[in-house]
Length: 300
Length: 91
Image 1: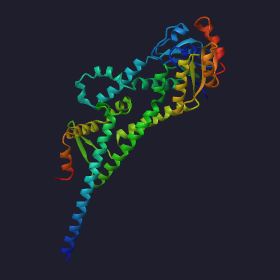
Image 2: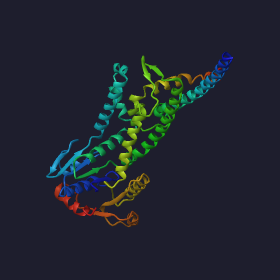
Image 3: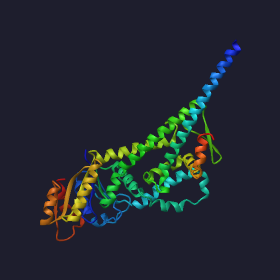
């Protein structure tokens, strides 16, 4: 059953408003969670409440939260660094804390933190989960991360198998060997079961395959929000194409703040079936106005 | 007669051990090179090579003490490629 909705699109097109309206409507059917994964949150502004990293009850069955991606990245690095400290005991004399901050800015860490948050949110106990994603660039990088990571993992696993098979051959002739590292005698693992690197790679592969299958499966639906403006439409079209190359199907398109515009009408029709939300006299805020928008997006 | 046969047997066993030793040596060199490539792939970003996403290297870091050690040895040897070739040909 489809119970997850992921809203994507260029910054400022109205993803938050559309997703907030959708959440409000779905909450009438069951327990619903809406989470903003955009580093520049304004979900709380749309509902007119103050939100944090833990779900806040908005009404009888609607919960909302603004996920702090920076905090997640920091916690993730801290967890990993602590594991490193446990293994490399001699590093305890060094102060690794200052490295934690710089690692947070390593390429891929922010995307991975968002991806982990995405999976955690969908595993939570709600009937419906709605995600308001960051602007297109970061979202596309995040959603394609499992695919690029799997390519690397498969290469590393192949190489590791080659190494282990040679170690096994050598061991079968010369017997078990040990090496001394940092004064400690370390036994050389020769089989896939006893090699911790192989085991870790295999676990990572399973995790990435799970995320990939989840993103391409029928549990979640991708909704692109765009405006009737050339730049916004071009960016949306490119995002759809890129995600399609990775097996992710953006099935629904919302043209927000729609006004009849001659130069983009043709472009909009090329996108296929779209849902148009008209441009209102003033910005929709608060529950009543969001309910009006939900009546329009309900067909999705 | 038995002594002669034993000696012949020992002679052939010696040849067999010699071949075995040589073939292991080649597998060892191959294995060492594969380990170098593996370490380079994991930590290539430090020297500007394309590398896996940062989180993958980071999460493998607790298990790769030995690989880092090998990378260190390979880096030390890298200024002496002739020495490595000489070692290979047992010169």
